[in-house]
Every structure is written in C-alpha cells, then in structure tokens.
Image 1 (cartoon, rainbow over the protein chains, first blue to last red):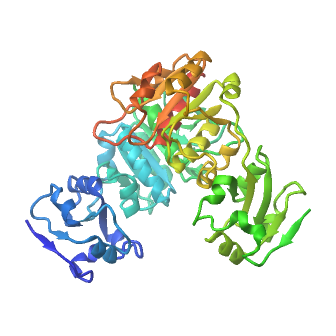
Image 2 (cartoon, rainbow over the protein chains, first blue to last red):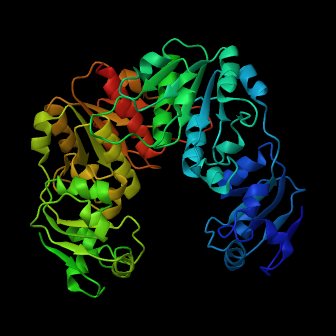
Image 3 (cartoon, rainbow over the protein chains, first blue to last red):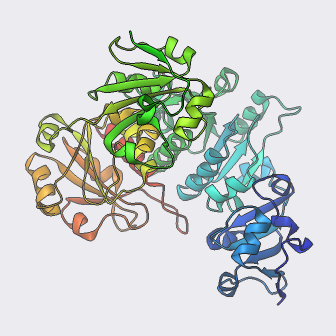
Length: 264
Length: 264
C-alpha cells in the first residue's frame, strides 16, 4: 500500500485537489468526493479512483484497494492546497468514466426522471439523493442542465450521483420531441410536473402506470411548452392559493413518493 | 410620507440593520425582512413595521403605509451598514409581536405540525414555506427548536413564517406527554414521522383522519422515544435499502402532500 506523507502544499501530487473553490478546472476533468461517506461510495463506483488525500486518522479508518495512492496531509497543508478548511479531512479523486446510453437505461428502468434546463447544482444533487432513496431507476438529462459530476452535485447527492444510472439525451441533432418519442416507444407514460392549477392531480396522473417518465423543468420557468406538449399528461401538486411553488427537488420528491405509492 | 436620504453609514437611524451577519442581536429583538416579496409580506402581517431601508428605485416601487419611515441608501452605504452586499436592496424591520396561544390554534386547525428539537434555521424556514403552500394550518414548537423569527428563517420561508400561525408548547413546566395529551383531547390524531422501516406506511397512518398533528424531530436523531410513545402511530416514508434518509423539510413536505391527498 502506497501511503506518502506530504507537507509541501506545492507538491504536484496534490494538484488534483488544488484551489477547489477558486476554479472548477478539476471539476470538469475529474470526479471529487469529499468526506468518508462519499469517498466510500466513490470507491464502490464505476469511476476509477486516482488518489486519496486526507488526515492520518481518516486514512487509517478507510477501507480502500491497496494500489490507490494515499497522500497523508495535515489540516494546514490541505487548507493551503484546497484553498479552504476541509474539516472532514478526506478527499478522493477519480477519472470521469463514460455514462450509460439512453438505450441501456430504458432496457430495464420502470421509473425515470427527465430534466430540462435544470442548471442549479444543489437541485441536481438533491434530486439524485431523493431519487436513489425513493426507487427511481435513472435520471435523463435534456437541454440546458448542469453537470451531474460537478463537485457540489456529488456532495449534495451524498454520492448517489456516483451510483444511480444517468445519461444525456442527445440535444444536438435529436429534437426534444424525438427524444420523448423514444421514451414513449419504450413504453413509458410521460408526465410533466407543473404548478398549473388546471393540470391533473399528481395521484391521478400516475395511477396504474407500469412505466413512468417524470419530466421536471427549472425552478421558476418550469418546463418549456415544447416539452410539455410531447408528454401524455400534465400533473400538479395541489397548492394553497397565494403561496409559492415548491422547491424543485421537493416537488420531485413528492412525485417519487406518489409513484411508489401508486405501485403498492 | 417620510422618506429620508441617508449617506452616513454611522447614522443611528440605520442601527436596526447594522452588522446583520456579525451579530444576531437585532434578530433577537426584531423581525427583519429582506427583498421586495418578503418585505411586502411583513407589511401585510401582524408585526408592526418600524422602518424600511432600501435603494431609491426599490422604495419607489413599494406600496407601504405613509407613516412608516423610509430610509433611502446607496448600495455602498447599505453594504457598509449591514456588513455585506445586499443586492436585493430592500429591508424592512418590525417589532416582534406576541404569538398566538396553543388554544387559539387548536380551536380552528385541522392539520398541524409539531416540531421537537429542530434547531436548523433552514429546515424551519423550508417547513413554513411548504406548510403554507400545502394546507397545513399551524406549526407548534416543542423543546429544543430554533427561533422561528430568526432572519434566516424569515428569508428561507419566503415570509410565510410571518403569515402562518405558530405557537410554542410550554416546555418549562408542562411535560411533553401533557402537551400531546392536550392535542389528543382537542381531537387530533397524533402521527410520528420516522425512518423506521417497521413503522406504518404514511398513507395508512393518515387515512381517514379528521384532524392530524404530525410530529417531526431533528434530522439525524429524529424524534425522541419519549415523544413517539405519546403518539397514536409511527409513520414512515418508504425508502430503498442502503440509501440515506430524506432531508427533514422534504420528508415533512411529503407528509403534507399525503395529508391533502387523504382528504380528497
């Protein structure tokens, strides 16, 4: 087992975790897991881990394959490298790996979420955490969404983005309608989530469906009319008049709950 | 209408909004609303507004009673006073007002939430936002909870903490059991929310109940056994094995949804 004590913050072996807040350069090339729970999930994932950086006791407690380099650092050294105080004291870095194809996902999934224009990393992370917890099989990304492997998404998802299957619908030459037609052809009932009070109650929209694809748009603008027109039904969560629509991840979590409930 | 231009950050008329991040002294005495939406809700609330501070165009756009002093400031002056850049450019400050009594709330409510040990201000704020949006009539605070009028709660709740009734159960000489007995006497069906996989499905726990009090504990420790023993039923939201429990406000929002659904 390779374990090296590093006390020079300029050591190039720490470059993968350098200036994490000041630049997202590493985020774009790599996958970064923070804290023992998420590091453990990265180690169990399909992403090939390049290195592990942490305080001595955190490395002692970690169960990781012997061929992965471990760099032991002090709190001060890690703060100097990362650019902020990482009190959890454990980081792991992996290379990005190809995602599944849409076809592979559709072959086995019964419940999927399709995102359109969801750029907020906190919402994407919460969506993965809740989807994993509540029986959703996969998440598909449509146009204008944020990067699912961004460091903040990995953290907020509690590492579930490393486990739950996801794929990008091809937005460059395939139209939104054609993408959704692919889902319909695979037997999915397409449900738009909308705050529109004229829409169908969520419970009625999901009742008795074998396969469901739930479309969710950005907080604020919501789904485009373009996307909603390509779905079978527009579903609402009942809201009191004069109040604010739910946070996006919360609204989706309610739909995940109703989906599980409809299968009881 | 009193509208005064202030360009000296040391002006004592701005003391209510001084050093908002560095100290919560003002938070304890006062209610602080940030941004046009929440300021509007504070103006419509039972809390007596003392002053409004903002950029010129924000004050121009505001519909407020003429007897409330308005202090016009530049972005630089406001940043110097508040201690950070307030890009929304509008603040209103009110005195705290007595809360409703538990008896007043129980007299008319059909759905209430009871919090135990919920100290996280973001969770409390989200709970108010979701409760207001989804037909919950009031929130009761048990032991060990955070301050519902803390600035961050007001912001995260989008001002709904200023509108939705709430009260504190008296934890000093009344026991938890006696407080819950008061709810049971008022006809409420007491439901504990728990991640325990042995608990009753939420849908079954809420089915066919006229009045419901939903008990929610802190994220992590959850409700005390003490509190759960005093309830009629322990309810769970179904979760996939090996995943993480839901965020507290999300779990509560799902229960609010199921409650509405059970009344359809």
